[in-house]
Amino acid sequence: MACVNPDGTITESAKALLRIIENPKTPVEISKQLGQPLFKIRSSLREMVSANLVKEEGDRYKISEKGKEKI
Amino acid sequence: MEQTNETQEKKIERIPRIGEPAPQFEAVTTQGNIKLEDFKGSWLILFSHPADFTPVCTTEFIGFAQIHPQLKEMNCELMGLSIDSVYSHIAWARNVEEKLGQKLTFPIIADLNKEVASKYGMIMPGESKTETSRCVFVIDDKQILRAMIYYPLTTGRNMDEILRLIQALQTTDEHGVATPANWRPGDKVIVPPPNTQEMAEERVKDTKFECKDWYFCKKELRRK
Image 1: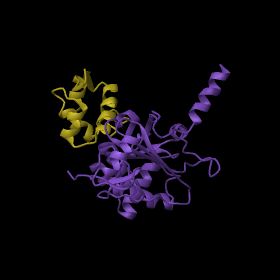
Image 2: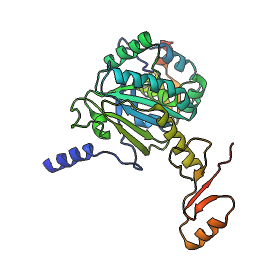
Image 3: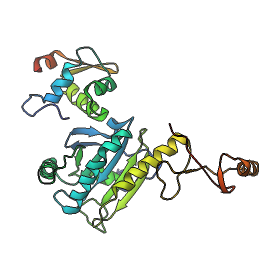
Image 4: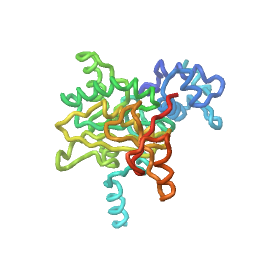
């Protein structure tokens, strides 16, 4: 589930992930809610944290202001 | 400094062994950048194939894709690898779906720099210096390497055996037993042999077990 396209736009699956983390969630919670394997969620979150679309809050993840602009 | 480099090189070339932590890596795949640690908590079959757009590999990929749903039910993921680019993998996956009707649902590592292949000893220079052999590494949910299978370039792997292997290993973990030759789920399992004379005497008297002798006892597993 690569999330960020080279032109800075994001994939539909990435938008779906961002939409469900208005309230912080753990990777396991996100995986269950989206029905996606945990390894894909971990990989996607890492990519989106690096692109400043997602913020880490302890073991949970939350959409950033930049992320909100993308959905 | 030279000695350190030499030592590191030797370390990288060492083939991992059963029971050791699986060598960690981060790799470009058809489903984005993936680290081995992303799979923590689930089992993983990491397998290599010689090259995209080759016939034996195509039959194997169809086979792996077909057992993928059963593996997922056993909390086991799949990931392929070859020394090809991600664009080649994408084109091949699309071709397999278009021409053969099978969608490839698992990530495939594009190991162009051979980093993962070297860490896992997937290249057999006697066969080919530029392709990975048909290797299978079973990595458990704690990222320990639990089993390895190596097949040559010419011979496609048996998907049924790969499924059976995962079933056997998970049964061993769950029940603390071993599994005999050609074991299938539902068959009797092997009880670990006793370690003392006293335990051996008790074992042969125990009616829960079907014993040929004190060291060779089987039992039924209770179905859940």
